[in-house]
Length: 181
Image (cartoon, rainbow, N blue to C red):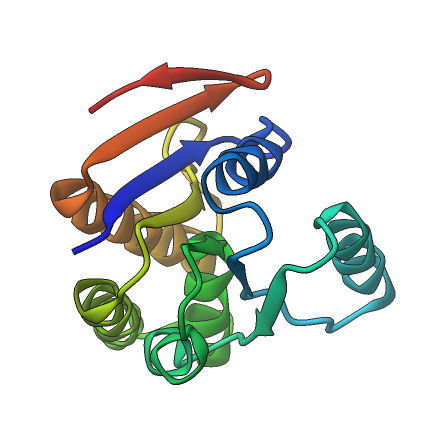
């Protein structure tokens, strides 16, 4: 199995930049970059364009908001590194389809199914390194809406599931990594 590094942190903590540098150091041009964002509005389209511009030339990109594991398996080929950015948006893609008052159990089941499929793809992968990026959203206030609370809870459990099997877990603060595991 490839080495699995989970990179956690808050918004704008430097997670993606750190992950890209790690992928570049390890894989050079042999990187599969898996983007989970959906361009649902102009602000998100701008963010996606900025992330695309930051990626090194030669990296293959897979843009997939759902069914990430099976799609990685289908296209990863001989990439030395698989970089998934990010679980935060993948969980959002699953939770938001349930509306403002989501069914917490169903949202969690769907998120766990996505994570399990991702971990199956990791276990079967011939790559040497997998890097998974996710936000740590449980350090702030309790969200005021049902959707916010379900999202925070589900993402927290997804992060725990990934951290349990990861070889390495880093927490990014102001662009600086702290080793957790």
